[in-house]
Length: 472
Image 1 (spheres, rainbow, N blue to C red):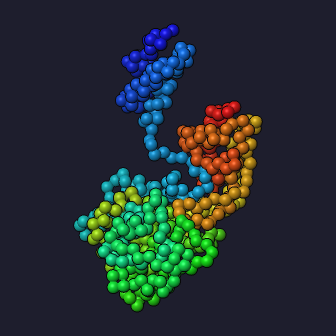
Image 2 (image 1 turned 90 degrees about the horizontal axis):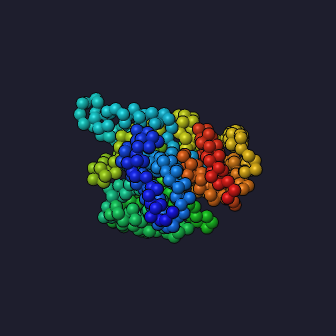
């Protein structure tokens, strides 16, 4: 059959719409989405004919056209932001959404978001209120500050603080603390945007108290400490702790600002994790304003949290940037529920997923690894894959505790007749994507970040990947 005759095999759009499988599809998916999918799949057939594809293959494609349209339409109609399985072992994985929130936190968000609320209404006086009042006392009391303010992320928090306290004036920072955070945002860039002037002191590896004092002038607005939470400089180093800067603060009446980044509220060293400075430690050491993230070690939603002296916080509330950086009711509801867990450390460890994953015992990970291995191997041909349980290390992630290696248990998949690259790609394309580690031609599934609810998904994903990649 010639090329022109092959085009006559292609069904008309009206005919396709009348097919039972497609008419049923339109009941579940908007008609426009289905029609767009039909046109796209028909156009693909036309392109195949133009490329010289033979009659047998064209007939085969047309015979499966309804399935192709259904798949296309379902993909078009699905959400772009989708849940997935994090099997990487990186607990605070920025690319995968950072910290998870608990069901209890989600329930509070649901209650607030599906009903009207007193977001900006003072129930006591029947007047307009402030959205920041719902968190201020709770957060300030937990960390020991006089007041608190919440914005949409920590970069915004630092920008707001500097814009309010140091616009047009100098801020002194150690060269060893001029960090770059995620997305190529750098502290010098944030400072420039705030309108403050960066004054660098010391060297990359060594900064002394005298370096700060020698840089102080009549134009100095603040001393800025930036916690190097996403890297470490090792070896011949020295730095000035916030509490050491108190002497300069009192002598020259200059406030101290500290960007803690990770925002841990409990002492993680008691759980076998390297000590990370707590927000309370900064406040107690004399820091006037502390900023930190909500979705890192705190284990809450994305937010930038500012705590410290009331006079500075009140000035920030009047800054026009606060309106641009303000958080919505979802964030406030999630943060309030998260912070309430911290009134009892045991409750925080139990109910905040990030803390629970970081502190889980190795023997519990081993038990879960055995259970998952048994589930995967059920009805699975051992000629396709070899599964072992091995000791490995997880990471904290999210720019927190970069040197920390957490002992963990991994399921290690060795593919016997399948390409590791295509297998891993198929896991990512599964209906609920599975994100794993690949190392030395083997696939690693880290139990630390795999939830019990993920077990059946992983089983299904592996079966799916093996079926697609047989014999590659």
